[in-house]
Image 1 (cartoon, rainbow, N blue to C red):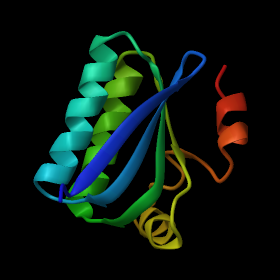
Image 2: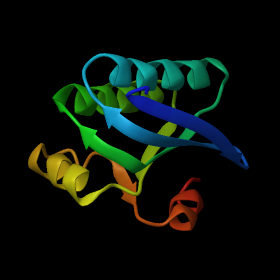
Image 3: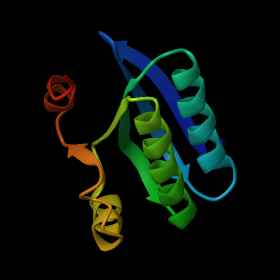
Image 4: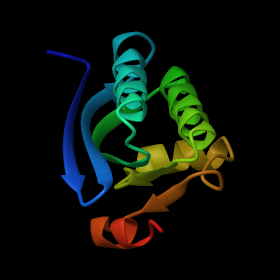
Length: 115
């Protein structure tokens, strides 16, 4: 079984990545990086990561979220997070990254937040 499964869907001009599994050193963080870079290459700049199915993320996964965020910002895009589990929310809070990301519990709220 793959560490991380990513499926992609569109809501207007927003690309939603539904993620399930683990975002950890190795396969998981590489899969995320590859997906983000590919979308940017396709000119898709409004990205929403749905982490509802992600049970575990390690420091390397957190690092990958941050570098994805940076890469998207550099292209003048927007990367937001949806459906964080309590564990991931706590991890982001501890690492002071909760303030960096726009985080949503509701997909409709998240979609409405894109300009």
